[in-house]
Length: 75
Image (tube, rainbow, N blue to C red; front, side, top):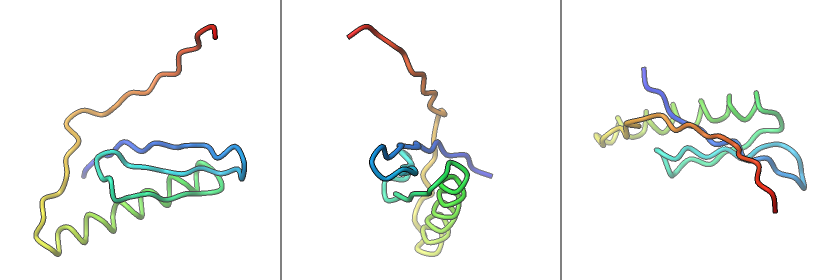
């Protein structure tokens, strides 16, 4: 079983989230809620890995899982 970091980017204008997977740059998906966005990301990752396997291409690895921390600073 593989693990991939996904980035959830809120859409302040339309609501919902855009999802990107840094280790798999070809994946961009979205969802109206966090749960939907994550489910769509999981499906997109699984499909991409399946296609890579079928083509005999290497499956990208994530050597270390990224940690994101929000830091507040005075502007």
